[in-house]
Image (cartoon, rainbow, N blue to C red; front, side, top):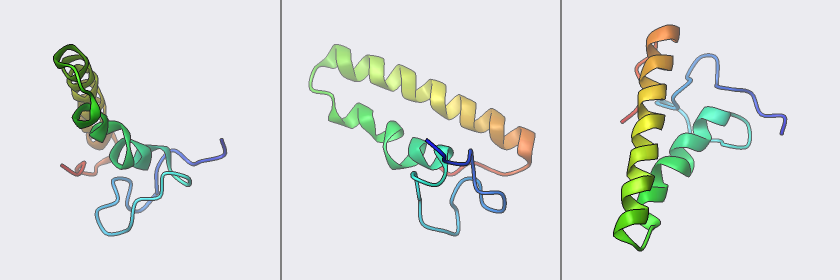
Length: 72
């Protein structure tokens, strides 16, 4: 796709607009973490929330490794 993984100076877009075409991590915030709210069934929402929790844990770990606090 050609996107960089994250912005070097602001990996979690705290002080810049999200740009999920340029940075893969921005796509987590621009789309993926918002998906649970779009599911219509309880089972679908539950599974989407489970997966979103996994993504948030990943972002927490990434933040620890690169020395930046993920956005909430």
